[in-house]
Image (cartoon, rainbow, N blue to C red):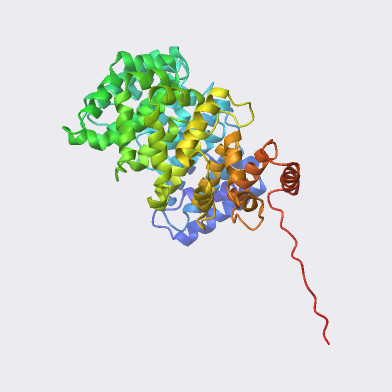
Length: 491
């Protein structure tokens, strides 16, 4: 083994790729046969040698395999493991990626004792332009940046972004790390607040639209904690963003931000519906108008936002209380225009309506108030007779993504007695549900099966049909009806 390593270390940069490949293959086979030698090869000299060869197309995978195999025999908690990890993190991106992958496998287990020196190198990795390094480091740092490390001056200095020199991607990663640390608890939030302050300043005072769109997405997570929402309110972030929307006709840049602003306020409203709907009702009037006018550049994000802010029971109550008829008008418009939308918008519209009707929990008894609200919306979509014919036709479409989205909507309706009535009254709907010939993908079959499971508990259908539902359930999702054969006797 040592002889092979020495030969590899003595190779010059001009060495033949074939010779390098043969030596590396010998080393790989030796590692597989004798895992105990892994520690003897992972040192600075060998890693420098691998650094020379990993850029060569014909041996790149071999180099990666050797490092992966060697690291797989290490317990990351060993005292010398972090020294090896740090050697790898100081190397080229392909080698850094291997070190990060190893840390990811033991992320939760090692977070309590990752040394400061390793964390400093991980912070530097946030600046990497390689997609498998910079973004992957975010989760590692969120787990590894303990409160004691957040008190360290070197860590704070390394983490503090320089607005003049830090690239947009790296800046967003730093902010995301700090926000995700901040929502762990209030103590952690206080330690990174000065960096979050810079994030807020970039959002409210900056002119980089792409950066602001990313920051909207990052800062929304703060609202998962009451203290996070209070912080944003005290910094006048919500008021500032509200003004951007109100000035949309005067400031072209606000128009570019509008999809992100809708998503941001939709996300915050899903957590604090009563407060946000009442204090910023004009923003949601704008959202509704985007849908009613089928705004071509905003319809995608508008439908996503509408579904998101409708999905919880508390949101449903607030929407009914604060917007009443206007909301019914909006969801009715969405349903009626599904045939006219492009295919991808049709899918979004169906998924939006699924969330409008879906309860918080399909297994629990649904609140009478929620049932009453959703029935009112159902009548707005399907009329007093609850005719699901159009929905059935969408379920029958040959496009799997569209029919799957339609069945998700059917499931969200089927949980209510009024939805079960609509299915029962619509000619051919039950027969289509029970047909084993309909549904070409596993996901589609799964959704049909889930609908039938709900209907089997219904009191709307007669005993014969309930028995058929239960038989369907016993047979399972992938049951195939046997084909009857007719044999003809030759004369």
